Length: 311
Image (cartoon, rainbow, N blue to C red; front, top):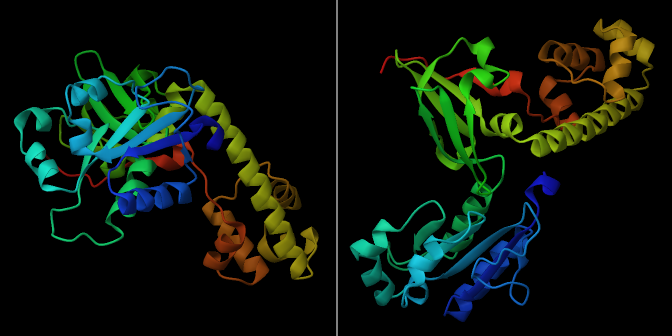
């Protein structure tokens, strides 16, 4: 999803400690982010490419000077902050009500002093988790308005959308009438609940594709590329075993035309097809999946009921 995601820049000049700054830089560089210093500052400049994001990491005490927290709280939605608590001064500020009230999804606190000396992985692990949540196919927040049937979503890159539940392409098939919605941990999906307390889980990427045509087009393009790659791998697996399509069709019970579509990336194998392919190739399904590296996101696969229980 690199094209839709754009680029995530980062700034770490507000980290006073050199060793912590180097630790943060190593973690962010390893995630493919690029340094923003010298190109744009932490003031939330609007000079950016659509889809680009900015992550700013620094000590809480550095940001809290003057009206710093008020300023960053008003930053554009594509700017996110990690406020580090490393010193006693940082901890005192964290205990102030005015500071606590301003914390939100884009102003996150990482307390490196909470459990005494923090392990070396604490900062990198936190930054990796945060960057994951900044993706456009993650949902930061979700809510549902039963009065007008509107689902409101805010995605990881700051984009927010409101859409009528009935207008979503998959909604009629579910037969579900939600009254509330919430983003699940890490934003991978949205949990909807109806009046009876029953639940429905919807993949966040499916929701983004429903409300964002650009994202949907790129998702389709990426999926087409993935199918082509998986098809090429399937062909190599077949050829490595000295089988023609006719041979594999006879051994698996799958028509040659279907095999052709699979190997040329024109369709995805269904679960029963995968089982037949594995049997025809003489390997386990898990081994075949590893060979094909099959991953995809589709509305039919990513919308399902969760544990159905009464509220």
